[in-house]
Length: 59
Image 1 (cartoon, helix red, strand yellow):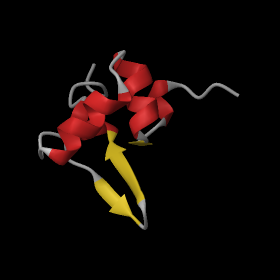
Image 2 (cartoon, one colour):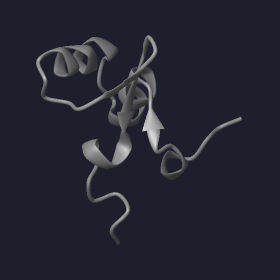
Image 3 (cartoon, one colour):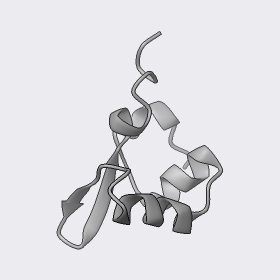
Image 4 (cartoon, helix red, strand yellow):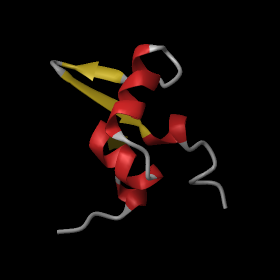
């Protein structure tokens, strides 16, 4: 089942890489340098879509 981008308030590194056509390692590097805000839940890192794409919901 394909989920629409707008329906993903929290994204994994793999989902963000797919949406931005970036490598997962580039996303990891941005997180580790502090350039990209994440929420760590347990052992999982969730990326808040609205922080990465602030204008996506504005139209």
